Length: 199
Image (cartoon, rainbow, N blue to C red; front, side, top):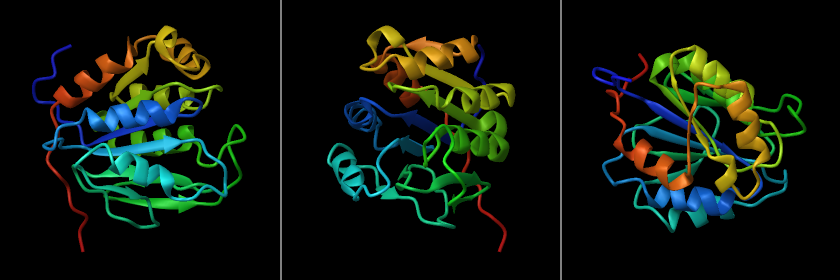
C-alpha cells in the first residue's frame, strides 16, 4: 500500500487480558518525536485507581494522561481511557459517557474505535491487542471501512488470543503481526498535521 500523502492523526489501541504488559511495551517503543495522538483503552474494573497511567508513564518520555471530559486531543500525547466511562473521540477533543456497558465493558473499545473512525476517518489507526473477548472487532471494522489503518496482534503471540482472533475474522484486510512488529510499524507511520478546533 502506498502511504505517500497519508498522514495519521490518531491511533486507538484496545486490549484487555494481558494488556498491561503489552501497553507498557508499546509506549516504550514510541519515539519522543511520535506525532499522533495515542489513545489506549484497557478493560479494567470500575473502581480502578490511576495506577495504569503511572505504570505507562514510567516507560515513555511522551506525556501520559487519563482522559477527562472535553480534554483537547494533542499530537504526541498518550491518553488512557478512565475506568467506568466510555471514551468518545470527537474532532479535536474527547467526551466521556456513562451510557450502559457494551459487551459488559465500560470503557468499551468498540465505542472508542467507532467514534475515532467517525471523527478522523482515513487519518485513524486502529490496533487490537491481547484480550479475552470480542470487544474492538466491530470498531476496527468501522475504522477500516472509513479508510483508516487496521492492525491486529498475531493471535498466536497474544497472551489471550480471543480478542485479536475476533478482529482478524471481522476485518480480514487488517495487517496481522506480532506486538514488536506493530510497535515498529506504528512508530514509522507518517503523522498528519495537528488540527485545532475553532474558537
